[in-house]
Length: 125
Image (tube, rainbow, N blue to C red; front, side, top):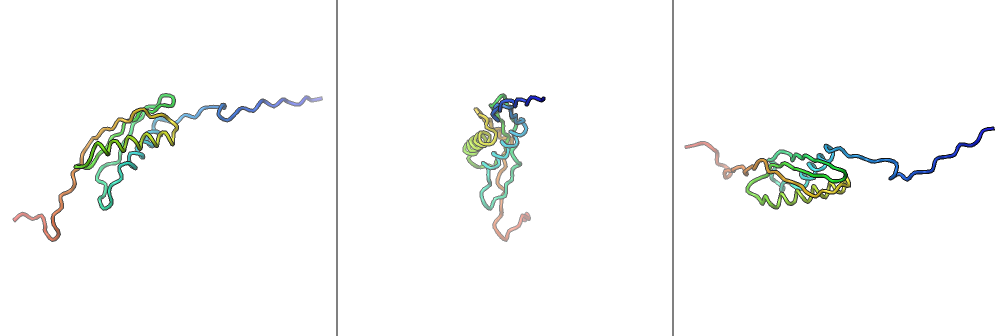
Protein backbone atom coordinates (compact mmCIF):
# COMPACT_ATOMS: atom_id res chain seq x y z
CA UNK A 1 0.00 0.00 0.00
CA UNK A 2 1.42 3.36 -0.96
CA UNK A 3 1.20 6.34 1.25
CA UNK A 4 0.23 9.65 -0.32
CA UNK A 5 3.12 12.09 -0.61
CA UNK A 6 2.83 15.18 1.44
CA UNK A 7 2.78 18.33 -0.63
CA UNK A 8 5.30 20.91 0.43
CA UNK A 9 3.81 24.06 1.87
CA UNK A 10 3.24 26.87 -0.63
CA UNK A 11 5.82 29.61 -0.53
CA UNK A 12 4.78 33.14 -1.45
CA UNK A 13 6.17 34.33 -4.80
CA UNK A 14 8.13 37.15 -3.15
CA UNK A 15 9.89 34.63 -0.89
CA UNK A 16 10.95 32.18 -3.62
CA UNK A 17 13.94 34.02 -4.98
CA UNK A 18 15.46 37.31 -5.97
CA UNK A 19 15.53 39.36 -9.14
CA UNK A 20 18.78 41.04 -10.04
CA UNK A 21 18.89 43.75 -12.70
CA UNK A 22 22.30 44.10 -14.34
CA UNK A 23 24.12 47.43 -14.14
CA UNK A 24 24.14 47.73 -17.95
CA UNK A 25 20.33 47.42 -18.04
CA UNK A 26 19.96 50.22 -15.50
CA UNK A 27 22.47 52.26 -17.56
CA UNK A 28 20.26 51.84 -20.64
CA UNK A 29 17.24 53.01 -18.66
CA UNK A 30 19.24 56.05 -17.50
CA UNK A 31 20.45 56.92 -21.02
CA UNK A 32 16.92 56.69 -22.42
CA UNK A 33 15.58 58.85 -19.58
CA UNK A 34 18.26 61.48 -20.29
CA UNK A 35 17.23 61.44 -23.97
CA UNK A 36 13.61 62.02 -22.91
CA UNK A 37 14.63 64.98 -20.74
CA UNK A 38 16.62 66.59 -23.58
CA UNK A 39 14.03 66.65 -26.34
CA UNK A 40 15.06 69.18 -28.97
CA UNK A 41 12.68 72.08 -29.62
CA UNK A 42 10.53 71.67 -32.75
CA UNK A 43 12.25 72.74 -35.96
CA UNK A 44 15.74 72.26 -34.56
CA UNK A 45 17.30 68.92 -35.32
CA UNK A 46 19.29 67.48 -32.44
CA UNK A 47 22.95 68.19 -32.96
CA UNK A 48 24.26 66.34 -29.96
CA UNK A 49 25.22 62.71 -29.63
CA UNK A 50 22.99 60.45 -27.57
CA UNK A 51 23.56 60.54 -23.81
CA UNK A 52 25.70 57.80 -22.31
CA UNK A 53 25.26 56.47 -18.77
CA UNK A 54 27.31 54.36 -16.40
CA UNK A 55 25.74 52.84 -13.31
CA UNK A 56 26.91 51.08 -10.19
CA UNK A 57 24.26 49.08 -8.37
CA UNK A 58 24.71 47.91 -4.78
CA UNK A 59 21.69 46.03 -3.41
CA UNK A 60 18.76 48.26 -4.46
CA UNK A 61 20.71 51.51 -4.72
CA UNK A 62 21.88 52.85 -8.09
CA UNK A 63 24.59 55.47 -8.46
CA UNK A 64 24.40 57.03 -11.92
CA UNK A 65 26.74 59.11 -14.08
CA UNK A 66 25.35 60.53 -17.34
CA UNK A 67 27.54 62.07 -20.06
CA UNK A 68 25.88 64.64 -22.33
CA UNK A 69 26.51 66.90 -25.27
CA UNK A 70 24.34 70.03 -25.09
CA UNK A 71 23.50 72.95 -27.33
CA UNK A 72 24.94 76.34 -26.46
CA UNK A 73 23.85 78.96 -25.64
CA UNK A 74 21.15 77.47 -23.45
CA UNK A 75 20.28 77.10 -19.79
CA UNK A 76 22.75 74.35 -18.94
CA UNK A 77 21.78 74.17 -15.26
CA UNK A 78 18.10 73.70 -16.10
CA UNK A 79 18.89 70.98 -18.65
CA UNK A 80 21.10 69.13 -16.16
CA UNK A 81 18.42 69.39 -13.45
CA UNK A 82 15.82 68.00 -15.86
CA UNK A 83 18.12 65.09 -16.69
CA UNK A 84 18.73 64.35 -13.00
CA UNK A 85 14.99 64.34 -12.23
CA UNK A 86 14.02 62.21 -15.23
CA UNK A 87 16.81 59.66 -14.73
CA UNK A 88 16.02 59.19 -11.02
CA UNK A 89 12.29 58.93 -11.74
CA UNK A 90 12.66 56.36 -14.54
CA UNK A 91 15.08 54.13 -12.60
CA UNK A 92 12.83 54.21 -9.55
CA UNK A 93 9.79 53.35 -11.72
CA UNK A 94 11.34 50.71 -13.98
CA UNK A 95 13.92 49.02 -11.73
CA UNK A 96 12.49 49.74 -8.27
CA UNK A 97 15.87 51.11 -7.11
CA UNK A 98 16.70 54.13 -5.01
CA UNK A 99 18.78 56.75 -6.83
CA UNK A 100 20.49 58.99 -4.27
CA UNK A 101 22.60 60.80 -6.86
CA UNK A 102 22.83 61.39 -10.58
CA UNK A 103 26.10 62.97 -11.66
CA UNK A 104 25.91 64.81 -14.99
CA UNK A 105 29.03 65.38 -17.11
CA UNK A 106 28.75 67.86 -19.97
CA UNK A 107 31.36 66.55 -22.37
CA UNK A 108 30.78 68.89 -25.28
CA UNK A 109 28.83 72.03 -26.16
CA UNK A 110 27.43 72.57 -29.66
CA UNK A 111 26.90 76.12 -30.87
CA UNK A 112 23.90 76.87 -33.04
CA UNK A 113 24.78 76.90 -36.74
CA UNK A 114 25.19 80.34 -38.25
CA UNK A 115 22.55 81.02 -40.87
CA UNK A 116 22.76 83.64 -43.57
CA UNK A 117 19.67 85.57 -44.64
CA UNK A 118 17.71 83.95 -47.48
CA UNK A 119 19.15 84.55 -50.95
CA UNK A 120 22.70 85.23 -49.75
CA UNK A 121 25.55 82.85 -50.25
CA UNK A 122 28.85 82.33 -48.50
CA UNK A 123 31.11 83.53 -51.32
CA UNK A 124 33.66 86.10 -50.36
CA UNK A 125 33.75 89.22 -52.50
